[in-house]
Length: 463
Image 1 (cartoon, rainbow, N blue to C red):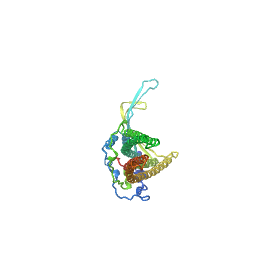
Image 2: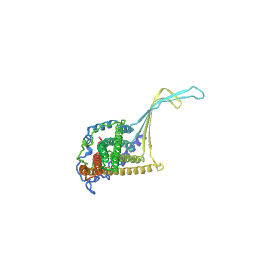
Image 3: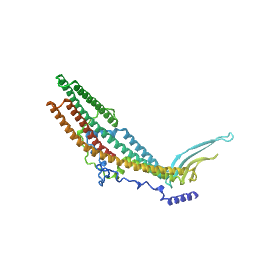
Image 4: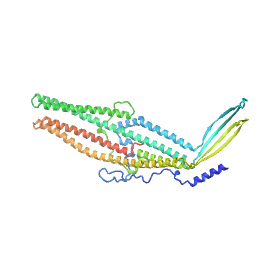
């Protein structure tokens, strides 16, 4: 009867505290702000004002990366990449832990058989045994188990978002490496053509020297230019091999040649829609991870608060025994025992207070980190928009420059044939053309990378 009154009393106290903070689930803080974090790429001061919810980050990666060979590589990477497989296993681990946390509401049951043999003054042994089943159940009136379960659910969600982040990184990483490979291929092609031109120039200059039309110094300068371009070609070829190896690592296979298309064949989305900044809070896995870290800290603080309240445990034992002390009954008799224990913290050397203060501080740190992650996400979007706008404009000038320098080479050759220019002027014109062609390829590659960066910054490839 006394135990029953105690339980009823605790239930009443718990009911009065039902509005207490320790029972409240996590809500996103009102102080978290994502407004105005996109900067207009063509304005030095204004933020990007948009109400269009169309978001490039919501597109399937197949619609962004349209090269069939690249798509095959991404599929291979998603199937084989070690980091992604490890992330999937961590999700399973968190799922198991969540299931265990949910089962904490149930009583624990243990079978604990015991046997004794007792002899008094050298007499016969008296044998006794018990076959009890012991059950223990903690009643969660003050949210200790509740907040532990909610915290574990947050950990499970966090592992899922980590898997999404890894998936996005792999997709965009493979795409960036693939496009870098195409850029190097094009630069190798341009440089190889230049090597052939310079080789012919050396032959021509040597013939002109024999004919007395130029000097040994001019021939030596042409040979030096030829060897310089040849060395550049070797360096580019080395970079191709290293980039292929890097891509193979992402695909979790041994280094080998990569089947690929050309840079000129690539078609990228032209409508780079970024949606509204609030979508970053739902789309970007790293932002969601930061929020789950905050939620986890919130539930840890709740657990620290709950530690101030009493804990109620009910234990029960039921089974058969043939002995009580040294008295033996035969046959065995059924026994049952129940016990309720109440533990109310009163003085714990300040540990509970210190733990609560630390938990609150960690929660505030998590909140600040969450806000900072949002700001950094906005920075990445703004930088990607600016990079694309800049490289798109630069590419237009690059193409005009290449066109004019190509004409300059043609005109210089014509002037040389008429005796109004030297062969070194042709060499200079050709060197300028090579430099401009390589720059055009590099800027085109950076424009493509800006698209990849923007897609990643908006949370693309997470699903």
